[in-house]
Image (tube, rainbow, N blue to C red; front, side):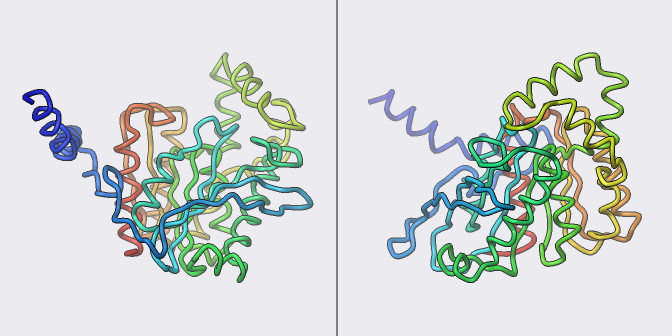
Length: 300
């Protein structure tokens, strides 16, 4: 009985302990959605679907996490990186528990989706996914509020999210998790990182129809297009969250956030966490930061 009692006490103390540890490292308080399940709604329960998204003659596999309640729900489009080993599905669950839908598509040529992979295709696939969320039949089926769409992108997906937001005025805001600035970042890493080609070859091997050299050439052919600083004038009036890690992207991320502030964006939030590129030992802290930020935009 004593062991059972200690176990119950430990479970009851977990949220308090987690938030105490976050406070010691100056990390965000973990909201309920990150550490506990919401009440069950028997009429409109939380669930998930696996719609196919058409994009330029190919089919994108995707997963959509539907929040409980009749809705319509604010909806996140979550974009993975290159090649997408970390898909942040734990973050998707936390966002859904906070009352949001989350659509997670897989680019052409990635993770079973049809077609071939290229960086240009990822931009097109993001727009196709936004269009999917606005189609009337999907709005009804998935209980979507088409006026409350927010993008979240990690690494190369962060570049895609910034670009898609800049080129789609109806996207309300965007959260960038250690976003990669493809043009400047690639050029700098090739000059200074002896493991660059090994890393890119390994990542490209998981994708269909491309090679590391082809992807680098794609960026080199139009370096201006692949610099996310060009997005700043187009997103300066929208909520932007830049979440940084201790990685190769830190200086670019800080410069992007500073450029947004200088452009007059009063809705830019910047935060740095002392962890790796995939937030391996800060997964709960990362989720807390994103969910808290989403709560400042819309209340479910």
